[in-house]
Image (cartoon, rainbow, N blue to C red; front, top):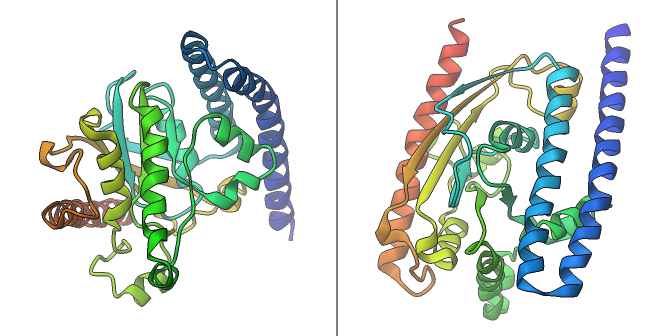
Length: 301
């Protein structure tokens, strides 16, 4: 009973501290974003973008400090890239939990350009955070089911158009675009329902990556491939702040994006569609083997 009470108090305290940190950083973030929106002058926009990125980096720094001091979780990393890597890059990662996001931010803040995630459109209504993500140019996407697209084929092009609009902004600033290729968080039930050929992963969806490569053209040259393993089989934010996650293991590798996969039309080019699906499937097979190794290494400790 006492253990459960302590865990509950840890979660409440962590939630409050995260909320305070968010308010402290989001308010000035919104002021700068509003100034950028009103003035629409290239020189001012450039300065505002730098200030917004600096505020976001500070916000993540504090969250990472809380991660370090409110939990005893160890993060073991293989292959972390050099610090202050600049340019435009694509980050792909397996997706198991909301904890994936603070882990990525903790590892790559000030090491890569600011991570930007593709978000579901309804997340813009999250109090304060939705506005912050909008201010930082996070792309908001509305997903359509296969049945909706079959009834209204014109919906199929809306995600592509939204991706292109978002990526147009990213061609001129340092950016790391994060894509959770599975599309949804991994659960054993989803894995079994899909009959996934991978032991530890859902089937990858090549479309989001393909649309990003299409929209960014030759600007994207570097792939940061991240694999995250939770050996304790606990991976929720509640588990994290209740101190129930003993260790997180992360494997990172930096790869070139094949030139023939950049700037081509996924919808109307069957050869490209096949090529990128084959490329993603190979990456996913390698990632599955990496997860197997990471989990086996933990089991042998």
